[in-house]
Image (cartoon, rainbow, N blue to C red; front, side, top):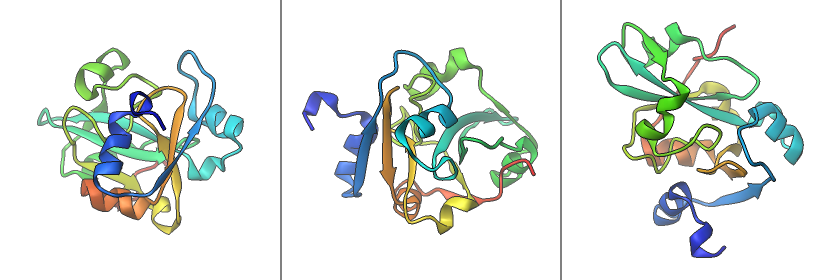
Length: 159
């Protein structure tokens, strides 16, 4: 892949010698993760979205959950030791992460935030996450990702 096509996320994975594959799709603006998974023929339950939240303390956190499921804010707060967390506003995504909505990934952000991955990913050999820009997905090992960014696996979705 040509250098100019690499995202910060890909450069991070290359630098840390983490194997990954890229999947791309045509898209000019944000579309939801279920639509992306279906368009690429990916299992929806193996395609995760990155959500960024801010805790009562002012700290930011990343949460990765399957695209068809919803983050439980109380479980998410407990997982990071906060009283509560709220998702950041869409208009703040770029300012906080350096990424745009639909292209946000837990790797290669302006700053590495504490990250929690829903525990269903722990039993997957590989899963799909955003590649750092709209139209790009990365397929990689959840365990390798978690190790490289010091993420943990916990139950953080609504039941």
